[in-house]
Structure formats: structure tokens, C-alpha cells
Length: 161
Figure 1 (cartoon, rainbow, N blue to C red):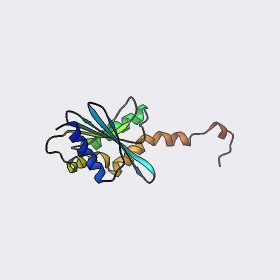
Figure 2: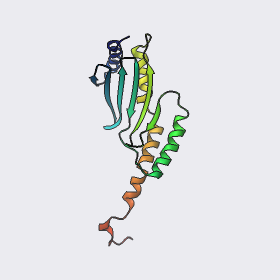
Figure 3: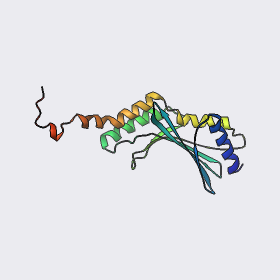
Figure 4: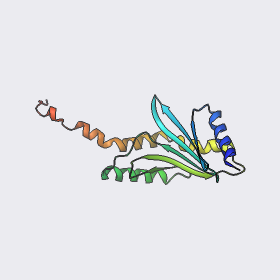
């Protein structure tokens, strides 16, 4: 198979769902980008990279980052270990340097790869369990809640009843 056939399989899968996507092409790979929203908020940003050798990388990046403080990173790492140990396919990863969180999966295209098969693999990355998603969001936002409850300088002289 060649890159043109891979592109057709992926485009057919996305078109079958009536999804809007962008396509960026080079001589070695094609990158597809899709954004999925829920309740008018971005839920996940997906990126599919298909290489000319048939390797397909699928990533779903969360719309928020993980704070880089030690307490959050330790809690988050423990939570990720708990989530990922039960998964066979897509796993959630944290880029510690950037703080980005993504669900990812990689597989090889072959002669028997169809649009339906690709779509099934894609959905494993895109469709993150609500409980997992909320748990990750809660951990990444836990210190923001504490900071917002701290006294502000202008509140210093207010009487608390």
C-alpha cells in the first residue's frame, strides 16, 4: 500500500461521520487534525499522522495541561498508572516538560485495513471514559481551587463574619 491509499481510508472514515478535519501533507506523512467539543467547550483535540511506511499514530490531546508542581505530578502519575494498567489499546500519557496530556495509540496499516477498522481504532483514542476524563481534570485543577480561596491583598482588611 502507499500513502495515497492510506489517505483515502482515513478520509473515508472521517467523511462517513461527517466530521470536519484539516489535512497537512509532506512527502513522508499526512497529518489530520480534528477538534471535538461538548457543551460548547473543547473536549479533545485529535491528530492522526499516517506515515508512508504505514505506521499510523493517533493522539487525542486534552484541552488543559497538568500543573508542574510535585504534589500534582505525583497524584497524576498514580492516577495514570491506575487507569493505564487496565487498557489494552489507547493509553493516556503526560509530557512532564510541557504539561500536555494525551490519549494515544499507534498501529500499522496493512492490506486488510479498512475505513471501518481505522475508525474503530480512532474512536478508542477519541472516546475517553467520562469518569477518567473528570478524574484527570479534577487532579489537574485541584491547586487552582486552593489558590482561589486564599486571601487576596485587597481582602486583607475586610472583616470576616
